Image (cartoon, rainbow over all chains, first blue to last red; front, top):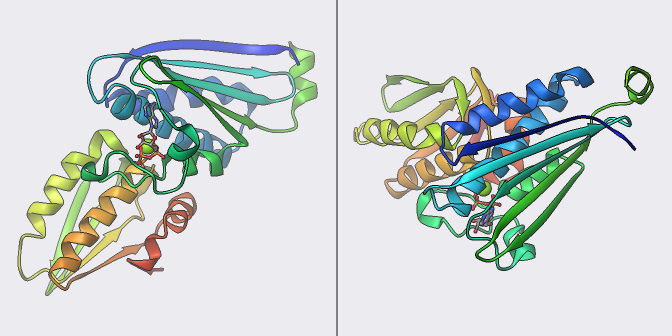
Length: 151
Length: 101
Ligand SMILES: Nc1ncnc2c1ncn2[C@@H]1O[C@H](COP(=O)(O)OP(=O)(O)OP(=O)(O)O)[C@@H](O)[C@H]1O
Ligand SMILES: [Mg+2]
């Protein structure tokens, strides 16, 4: 599958950039003509991953979050949310519903579960002390032909 | 954004706009001030005007549920949108909090 469109965005790990990241991603996906439902699914997943990068990856301290999004001519959208923060020791455990390391801060431990239920696939790569990449994948629709022709 | 109305022992809080981590702390602070009022025995979240919510909303509501439960009070959510409803369902929120239409 060949890439039709691609974008990278680096921003500081500030809470006010959570809404910005959601807006950027939905703007980027508009040419795919997604339904409002699909757009909201992706925005929710991106919000979870970006929030995790800010509060867990960087412990609400300084750092840069990178968003790398692309879509291919078969309508498959891939969004990487990347931090160079503290990393996750046990990824399988972290992905379990209700698992959180921020009990006192009123986190519910449902972020990964929400990402999984709104995207087709969620892939996590992480190393302690190096950072985390969350790859969110979703097929937006069956518009492969017109998009392929346009590309 | 948050607006509220208290009728007898019920405090109804209407949340509008987007509920994420960036606004959860200030909403929490405002709510906790409001429910200090000992007359409040029931807290209802009116979510009809909520345009976006992620898992930060679960933590916010469960946190307020714990505060209310500690003093024998209850919490309900009204008019959650489809996606918000699904998130609450996943989190088992409706085992703690009543869902109104
Ligand atoms: N980018 C990250 N860097 C380091 N740790 C992470 C990262 N993302 C997630 N984690 C770890 O995985 C756990 C689970 O994440 P998840 O998003 O499911 O729940 P949460 O953020 O704790 O709570 P919620 O998302 O419901 O508010 C986190 O508590 C944290 O320990
Ligand atoms: Mg999270």
